[in-house]
Each structure stands twice: as C-alpha cells, then as structure tokens.
Length: 158
Image 1 (cartoon, rainbow, N blue to C red):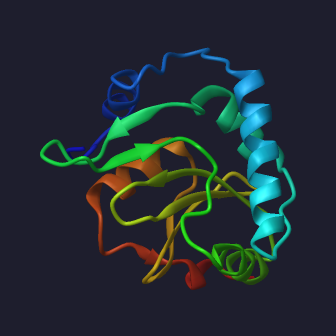
Image 2: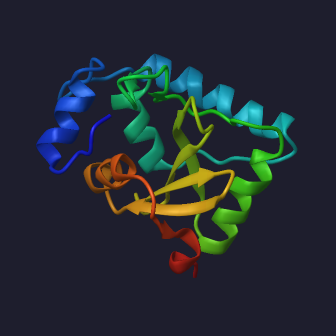
C-alpha cells in the first residue's frame, strides 16, 4: 500500500481488491458478524453489533488488499480478533470512548485491528496501543496508509 493521499486514491486501492460503489455482501457480512460475536465471547468479552460497522462490512467484507507490495502483508476486511486477550483491549477502547466499537478489518503482518465506533469513527488497535485513524473511511485509510505517528485513541476518550 503506497501512501493514499485522496479519497480517489483510497477508492482505487479498494477497487484493486474488488470493491466498487454499491457493492453488497449482506450474507457474508451477517456470517462474519456472527463469527466475530462468538469469537469475542470465546475470548472472554462481549460484542454488540453497531450500525456503522454493519453498513461498512456489507460493502467491504471479504476484500483483501496489499499493504506493502514487497511482502505478504495484507489488509483483510474481516472482523477478527488477532490475538488472545484482544477482546479486553477492544473493550478498553470502547470504555474509554464511551461508545461501542466493532472490528471491521485487520492486517496480517502487525496483527492490528481496525475498529469503528457508534458514530462512524475509525480506530486502530495494535500491540503498541490504540490509535485514532479518522472520522470516515477515506480519512481513516489515508491515515492508516501513512502509518505512524497516529493520534492516540486516548485523545478521543469521553
């Protein structure tokens, strides 16, 4: 993934993975949401489905996009826990924000998870902490592509 500097660049990157405006994968999204809820329960947490996450997943679930051209690092648009104990870390971000959050994507190299909150903001949970990505899909993926430094999620806590 090169640095995405515009909404058009984000859309082009997603299109390379099979996305197009109006894409709908309702059945896959429903199955993945159910799997995520069960995975969180098995990891000792609970997860509520929120409208912004469901809306995003219906359009993007199943996409796999390259993060770095020279590696097998990918961004996978599936709601996954990337390590044991991640449910607690997700809950910590939700508690701090005072908003429910839901995972919508993850990367395969760092094991980071992209989350959406109830108002549609995007956050990134990484083993080094929680980070704010943006207020919408385009700004979030532009920030994500740029990499560190990212704003600390705690700056957005209630």
